[in-house]
Image (cartoon, rainbow, N blue to C red):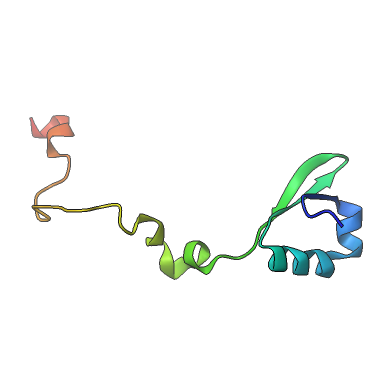
Length: 81
């Protein structure tokens, strides 16, 4: 059974089996309708999908901020000039 793409009719008949394969292989599955991709099923990743970890992707991006109380981008506002 290929894990890259599957038609809707094949997926419908063996949905649980395909979901288990996605979980085990940690690879996405594209479901097609008349040869066109319509749905993607991907393995769950708690680090990036958990609503409590929305800032996880930004972790380590900001290295140092010297004046955290200063307005950010104040020079970009026309009304302040």
